[in-house]
Image (tube, rainbow, N blue to C red; front, side, top):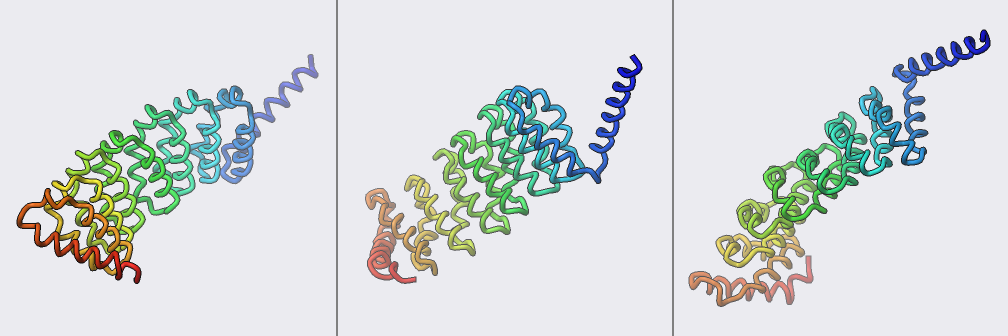
Length: 276
């Protein structure tokens, strides 16, 4: 009996010591190693440890938080979905590695669960770290057109972003909208024809090519200007779009201008387009 009491006391004291170490910021390496070890458990056992791993999402050390997020990705789908809300909170984490990990883990959720968190993911389009932005674009890029349309106002706000990559992603994402939703935003796309980045200008031309002629015609002069763009790829895209127009659908007032653009397009395609 004495031996058993001593053994229980030792075990109790050991547990108290480990708990203190787990809370001590100076022992963050131990906490990270513990989380990593839990991540190697079979799925059923890992699910039972999910509450302990979730606690580490609030750890004072970012490396521990990031490790906890990535380990949660290994949970069975149903258990992971139950913790989606706390994972989504990490999208606002002060550490970019944690934010990127959170986007990646949320991307593994079933579509119906992910839908609740896509607005928060869309906010990461202007994250100050390229890895987080790219991860967010990767998630949004896979959404059905109808789901993406609900995020159009958030995406539109990124058309004026200081980052070229963010503006480009915004234009390309808008190009995936259903035709009606895209047509309602044609003016904003046309503005990107004057973007300082040739990649953004080219993307804008290509997105306009997805619209019916009736929606593009009011902006035909702006497209015509792209035939003299300083970038060869922009000129090529503009020429290809103008050459695809059906002459019979043009208003009489545009017919002569269209013929001029068409001749210019053919000239660019046949000669100038091969040079930079």
